[in-house]
Length: 39
Image (tube, rainbow, N blue to C red):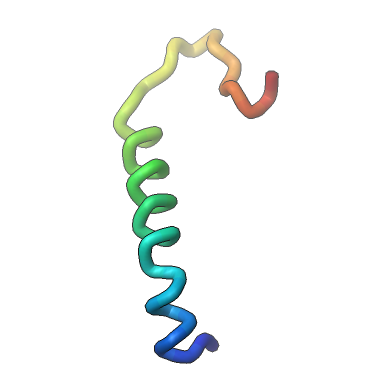
């Protein structure tokens, strides 16, 4: 789908996004707490 050059350019951004998703997945919010992106 992408060339090797484009994948290299996006690597840092993809790693950051993956880390943020991992971090979010490690936290169990209170069941009545609405996620910030809905506020």
